[in-house]
Amino acid sequence: MKPRRADAEPFPWREAMAFGLGVLKLAPADFWSMTPRELSAALAGALPAGAGREPLPRTALEALMQRFPDQSMEDG
Image 1 (cartoon, rainbow, N blue to C red):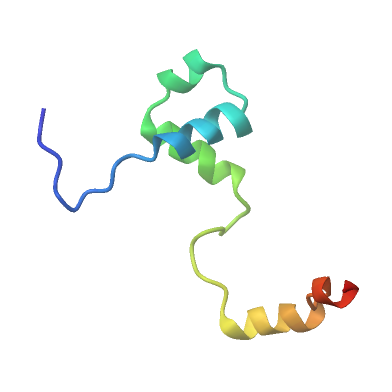
Image 2: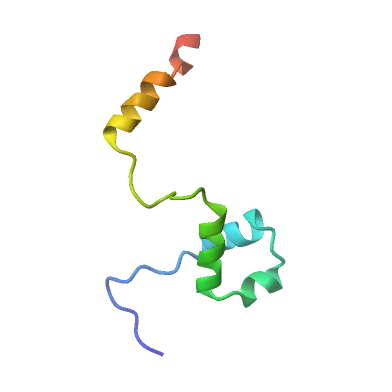
């Protein structure tokens, strides 16, 4: 077994299991038989098209904030 690189991030098992078992509702045996590439493809298929690829441009965020203002503090 190769030693882990010092700058390598550990695999996010908690998030992977939450997605596979909780969101996809896979049986544990099905989840554990998946390859990381298959799990990644399932995650990509579950997200809206383009999600996580590029951040929302500031102008688009400002337009959304203007269109849908936060009214939670107005209920005071």
